[in-house]
Length: 401
Image (cartoon, rainbow, N blue to C red; front, side, top):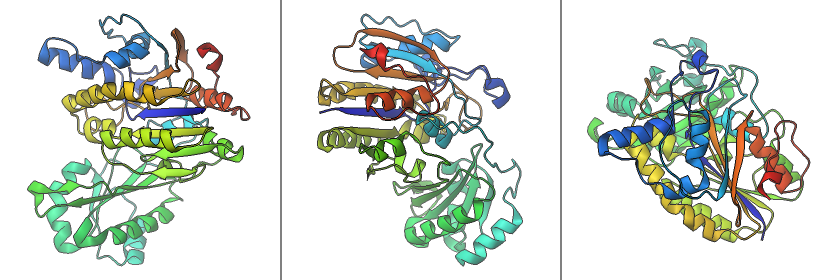
């Protein structure tokens, strides 16, 4: 059996990039600051021996000014760091570039003002959706805004609409009172209206609860992304009789293009469990592509370094499960799509290098260096599956032999 597993630890940046100053992110370091925060509070670094053994510390120390003094006795894996070519620091840009399609044009963004959405768009949206209006209409944290406006939404029937530093229009509605299907329909209308604004994603954010103190977002999130303009690695694989098994929000990120099967899961444990199940059940010549969203959604954006550290430790505890499920010919790659430093100011993503970690059975220590683009991952997978090369990226498969 021959498969590849691509795990995206969503937001696991390892140090700010040379262009981070233009994003306001010079000094950000998601992984390094999470590790240092834990050490300050507990007197020592957290134990992540399996990730260290794959070369994560070595990868981070390549590009970070803040070196982590963690000894790794033996590395069995290939490790490097990659910077981003895409103009943004958002989820679609990171994932598309990883699949060989850097986003070199600007996304549309909403200004950081009150009433940030265009009045014509709001009028068209509310009329077509048949709702009495919207509330929010600002930049906000998703968990904070439902606490502030959730009760008003329940009384008025007006969807809570907000954005962030990403190219995104987010909609929070009560799953039972407003209704899940009505929320999805509202978002589909918004998606159609926002193509001309080049907004990357519209995201449905349902929640439950009876009052501000107990509102909680549910796992029925749904992303409506712009389709990639040209084929990505996923399309090339499917066109050449390979399979792409998407786990988590991968299907939504790629607007369901180039996907053979899609498996939804909620929570880090479930995402890894489902990845293992898909690995076992998928035929040979399958790419198992998983997004581990909790790092970003639950801990990065919420500026929770303790939670982020717990998630890292949990991922570390499951590495052996993934290795054991691999055949001798399988390839594992672990990377990220951007940073989201939980110790940084604000709640937005951070412009950072990402780790590029590769493992196959019998591998020794391999230094992959600093890569010029996330697309090196896609180019390597194209070579692994023996499909035509992508237009962008430099393959490192020969280094793993």
